[in-house]
Amino acid sequence: MRLMEIKPGARVAVAGAGAFGSTIALVLAEAGFAVRHFDSARLGANASGVAAGMLAPAAEAVFDPAAAAHLDLLRRARDLWPALAARIGVSLHREGLRVEGRSDWVDEVAARFQALGLTFRRDAGGLTSDEDWRLDARSTLAALRTAALAHGASLQERALEARDIPHFAMTVIATGAAGGDLAPELAFLSPIKGQILRAAGGLSEGPILRGQGVYVCPARDPAIGATMEAGRSDLEVDWRALEPLKAAALALRPDLGQPMTAEVGIRAATPDGLPLVGPSQTPGVFLAVGARRNGWLLAPLVADLVAAYLTGKDPGPDAARFEARRFSRPDDTE
Ligand SMILES: Cc1cc2nc3c(=O)[nH]c(=O)nc-3n(C[C@H](O)[C@H](O)[C@H](O)COP(=O)(O)OP(=O)(O)OC[C@H]3O[C@@H](n4cnc5c(N)ncnc54)[C@H](O)[C@@H]3O)c2cc1C
Image (cartoon, rainbow, N blue to C red):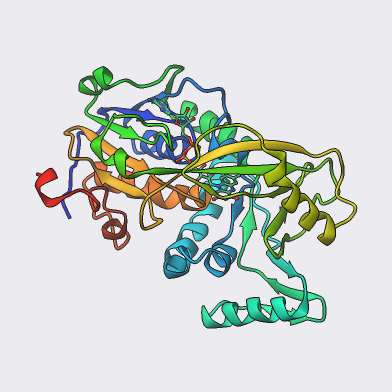
């Protein structure tokens, strides 16, 4: 693994104020770099602000075939959250996950839990697991920003452009699905549109609820999600796509408050479902993109990885799985 230490206190640009960029800006500022954080979007006007805020290694591994092979990594990422949350003054809700539905389907889910070595309790109405946690996405973005500014980072309320890159010792691209041509590796990202509903109350606390084809994440305005529309990057709300989610959620909890509102975010995905984290083939550019469904869950692990690279430390066992140039042809790389 190539290390790329840059001088302590060096100027570092971070492009993107989603879960990845905001956590990276904080961790690099804490490490003593002079961080300039770029984004033209209003705080939370991105996939990270729309997200349900689940830190859900178990549900992801059980319900998303692309994640099952990465359960170890997802759990490690979750376990970094308590320390980060304490640093930024954010509450984590650790009431776990509740799965409810037809008993043959719950049995099937229980078998998947068992096959993955996940602990759970089966009862007459469903199953419960302590593995999954949640946070409030928008207030966590605000807390990350406040903490980064307190550590000396500065905010640049515009998009980073290619001509900015030579002015920094390193530029970290954390632009989600919208990085354009800032680095050639971004061409390997594809968009997955996600639509999510917010109910007007009805499930403010307790475990995350999962039914067949739907989750309800407790909050003042519970999140009901979410569509996975591969290849789409438009921000149009399509109520026809949301009706099945609404019906499934109301079947689980008929007292979810109406009317419901809808939001849209665009996830960025790589061919193997893991982010690109590491040096780009473009000198002076470092990538942290492609979070797919797990940007919040993975954020502290990815930020620590970026900080390890930039401070010349061993980036550890996850670095190879995240290698940023793994999809580039050999003759594209140095
Ligand atoms: C409906 C939905 C529900 C989800 N629920 C969860 C969940 O419960 N748990 C979970 O872990 N994940 C969830 N996700 C996934 C998660 O939201 C994403 O993986 C995560 O938000 C990606 O974070 P990011 O920082 O990479 O990108 P984004 O949040 O997309 O942020 C990228 C930012 O980069 C900015 N930008 C773009 N170009 C430039 C530029 N040139 N210069 C500067 N800034 C630029 C954009 O304005 C944007 O603010 C969900 C996603 C969706 C859509």
